[in-house]
Image (cartoon, rainbow, N blue to C red; front, side, top):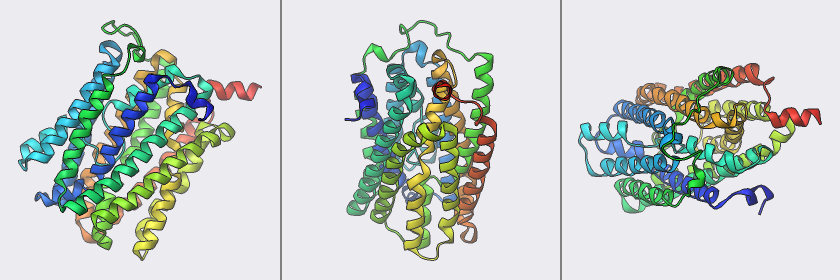
Length: 405
């Protein structure tokens, strides 16, 4: 076992487990969600609108729960989030009524991208940061990211295979709801040690003026990155492969199994690069080529070449995730971590919520179906350049200490 992982307590391992359960559910749903909704009779444009509402609702839920977690209890807020995840899944699986689907999409927790939504990530990050030293933080978050990516990969493969074998997408949606219940049960096993203080005590963990400026600037950039990524969320990317090349659900599950597997392994490499390059440089220097590859995907003339380029893109696309998370936590005071993670997480979800509304129209129009890939790649490159310019000189404490040594 790597030395850094030995620092994890029982609560730390439980948080890794709940992330795996959650992202397995997200991955399984993401490869069939758009196909499921179109099978229910939604047009691609209407589906884009529903996904936008889903992400907008997740933003509101995240903001409400993360800003209250330190006061009312992190464990309680995590359980509430898992309950909303399960409720949304059951509603999606049990009705075709537009009103209830919109209500579940807005109030519940549904992940169309296969990635994190809801309050979970921010609260878990803040909890993990308390149990590891700063020097091990990035490594722990890299393993945490890899575990989630592997779970997403397994979920994508399982969801696509289940849909193919059963001839129905509803079973995958029901699985999503059931795993939400399982996650809620595991969250109940967390100890009081995950709390920042006595539950019910009023937390004075706002942001200082200096931290507020940094967090708001980071939030605006993260929102831009997420907005760009919203054009190619995994559900829409799977739909594009289905329409462009006729890929069936099992094939889509296999594609995104491989993609997320590569993404998870790349997260571990990120922690090693960060020790040499620093967090910001690692974020930018690995993200730029990933975005160029994203632009190349729709330019590939064959199914096989498009898959190869997509897999190459995923092999480096997640290196910025643990470094971004570690950087956000590092540049604020320890008592500000929950707020910083929550605010930047909400900014990302807000950005991601807007894009599917436009993406749905683009995917629905044949000649413009590949435009979302170009928009996403270009906007992400702009994000990388702005991030480097604004933050390369602002180093976290451990990097400054290393430079002095």
